[in-house]
Length: 82
Image (cartoon, rainbow, N blue to C red; front, top):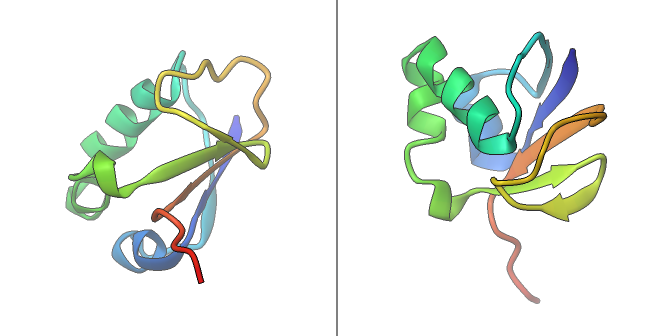
């Protein structure tokens, strides 16, 4: 079980700020594939992965990262400077 958190437009498209997900995914990419296969709102949110960043347990990561031992996966758009 992993806590999945969505920020900004990902949260708006999916419709929830966070959820607990039972997954057998080995990597972040596998988790994204599982989520996208759920229903259209997830597929829409993850349609362009170039516009999505990921953090594992609040550490910036990438889609090839393993999920073993991870408690929280957060998805968010790229941050802009300011």
